[in-house]
Amino acid sequence: MTTAAQVQTGLRELNSIYLPRLAEIVKTEQLTKMEKLFEIKFRDGRDLGHQPGQFVEVSLFGIGEAPISVSSSPTKKGSFELAVRAVGNVTRALHTLNQGASLGIRGPFGQGFPVEEMKGKDILFVAGGIGLVPLRSLINYVLDNRSDFSRLLVLFGAKTPAEQLFLDELAKWRQSKEVEYWETVDRSDGQWKGNIGVITTLFPKITVDPQKTVAVIVGPPVMYRFAILEAQVKGIPDDQIIVSLERRMKCGVGKCGHCQVNHVYVCQEGPVFRYAKIKDLKEAI
Ligand SMILES: Cc1cc2nc3c(=O)[nH]c(=O)nc-3n(C[C@H](O)[C@H](O)[C@H](O)COP(=O)(O)OP(=O)(O)OC[C@H]3O[C@@H](n4cnc5c(N)ncnc54)[C@H](O)[C@@H]3O)c2cc1C
Ligand code: FES
Image (cartoon, rainbow, N blue to C red; front, side, top):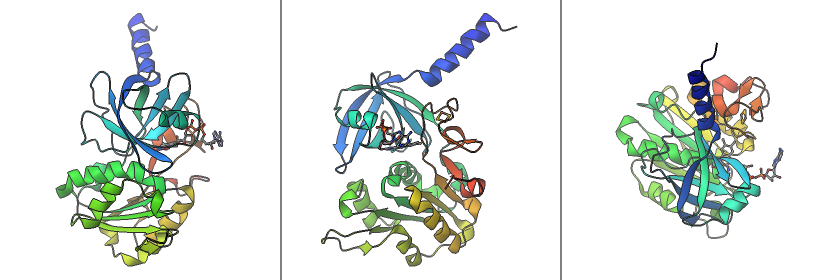
């Protein structure tokens, strides 16, 4: 028989996954025409306690919720950052909010990047466009724990120079001795002096030790097939290729089925997956 105490515990657990926690925007920064960065803190002062690669459900009262990746590293304490592209109801409304505005946050949810297993390895980060948002959390985590990792290579591709995100950080990585940074744009604006072409044009420029390398690939759906193929051509085994899949999500906690790919609930088993695990899953890539 279910006791009153068990009912209470069950209700508390349900509340904790469905009830947004009250948070406040500390700072905003327009990153590009479409993307804005939000620094957010909880009203109760607690940290988010996320892993790089996890996401939260952002709740705007009276409007709705949207899943958004956490873009800051867990090494940043007291607040966290979300970089949001204005595309629909929630994200457009979020873009109108400024410092001091209230919002709700559920989460963090999902499986993040396997940072413990990546320690001691060479890491090849491959970010396409807005894919840099979740990868930035991992890159900054790795840089803040630099001695735990070996070589770090970052490949970043944007459609145009105006669509490059996090310009200050890119400038640091270009100068840094800690990171081997390579970048490209699909189309130049006339001023661009760097590589022109899709992100896969950067792969022939790098050398990797495949058995020692973990490739972490995040970008638009069209990028995955080709970037994964390039990583395989370099000899990187499928279980050392890690991707983050974006699927339509609603609840974020394995209840509604919106995110389902065959038998897999992306919100719970992902969004981060080893390629070896999902390569035979129809429609995953
Ligand atoms: C794990 C995860 C992490 C994410 N991280 C980020 C992030 O860091 N930053 C970010 O900007 N975005 C991120 N997204 C994407 C973001 O959640 C979506 O863009 C979300 O739809 C925005 O909500 P909205 O209410 O503003 O847009 P919506 O009103 O949902 O509309 C978004 C677009 O999708 C279309 N659309 C809506 N519903 C459907 C449907 N059922 N079928 C087909 N098309 C539809 C709309 O017409 C519109 O073009 C992430 C998504 C996931 C799953
Ligand atoms: S988003 Fe509801 S089950 Fe995954």
